[in-house]
Image (cartoon, rainbow, N blue to C red; front, side, top):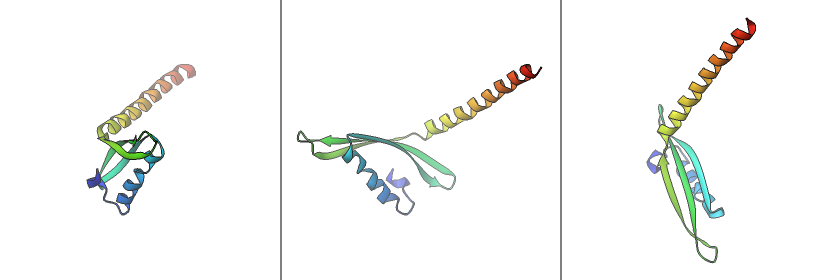
Length: 98
């Protein structure tokens, strides 16, 4: 993931993201990362605090998953649903106006 952080201040933003799990037991985020002018990758980050018996946070586990394909598929589904809903709406409008 750090290879994709190329914008100014991006590395400090990533480091600040690590503070959130220290304030809660678990934290999930989905963030876009610009790879090139024409390519954006999406990553789902799951952060979990490692807590000692006395309640002190002693570490953080991070699971990072590239979900770009999932995000593209979800967008295609949204477009398809909108298209078919508009077809049905037009179909019923025709019969109601008839």
